[in-house]
Length: 196
Image (cartoon, one colour):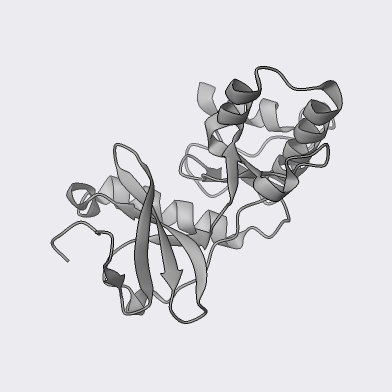
């Protein structure tokens, strides 16, 4: 395919692009209607100039493979698709209705202690699960994590929403660390992976 995805387009006769959610330097994230289920989804599509870049393509495939293998209430769900039915690279996920953590913090100008503790505990629970699967996320910025709209209460649910920098134990740059209680946590694994 020789053009970028546009609003109104039906991708592979299944996903009708209905809006642009975000845009980065290498990919766009669209909202779409899944015509097979009539449900809304999010679709991450690389910009056209990066699709033929072997390094980027390998990273994009790794991101999808890692995310699709994860199954946890606080980790974004990825829809598995047959590569033979896709005309171009893209990743389909559940549509998260809420706000990124950095936006929430700016808009609220401070949050109460119980709310903050709950969010941190849920995030730690999600990353403990991710690490048990042999994955290190390596990009824990608040803008990468979503607080779901229906959980904007003291019981809010956070979901890591971007695995583009994640590595597994099979990656050359990642060496599995000893599973010691003081070492096996979201911050430790990330810092160690980045130093290498």
